[in-house]
Image 1: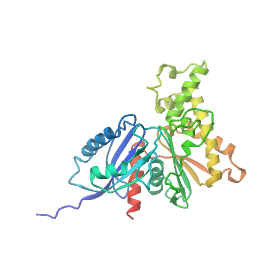
Image 2: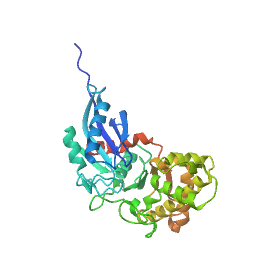
Image 3: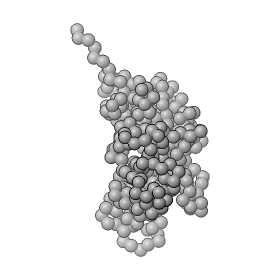
Image 4: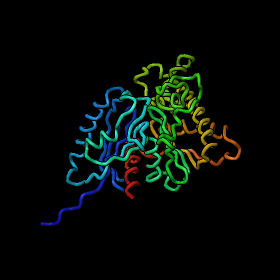
Length: 323
């Protein structure tokens, strides 16, 4: 009888978003052996999420149990603290103020867990597998339900004194502006995110008389993808919404340049799929607001990574630690 074939070592990677959770099995070289996407249920209970997660992982592994060996779990989650293993005051979730997510998932699957803020995980993923492979100074922004950011300086992820560095989504655009789920007003993510641009669209629809196909869509049914599609078709309201979003985001990126002097910003997440419709106004307003010494030196890229491959970031957290 022939020798038993060696099992493939993989990380069980989890990208927990405000709307969807993506899970997958990822090899050290970034090969994805399988993946699934399901609703996070961020407005419901954490216990319900854990039950769904257990079922989804079982389905993911069902056909590969004899072929793989899961070495650890990597998690990217909003407001996840890499020091405590907890999600701390995540603004778009109703799971409680402090969620012991690392301990809970490690206990459930009997595996070690490496956890980071979702945007920090995305930054590590871009550094290990993506377009930042040859960069030492860059910032990744995740433009999804909210806005997250992961900062890399001199090739190292910046975590800060309390593990919470890089909350650019909660810098102030207008202290008297839109209410944010974090309790503050005028946070950048209330404008530059999928949720934010939806709010912008509905404000424009109420203020302007221009014809727009977006008038026939409810707030609940409207998605970033729909707004992007209509902008590509020349919809006046959709285009105006992207101009406003790009103006605010570009301005705040200019502020960030003054602090960090990065080589580049990399935009990921649902809103980034709008492509040049978003990139154009962001770059224009970044350059417009830059201090002269920085002008023409900072690039802005759209990550080519598929949204379903957001699991590469959490996987990279584990593989980097095991080097």
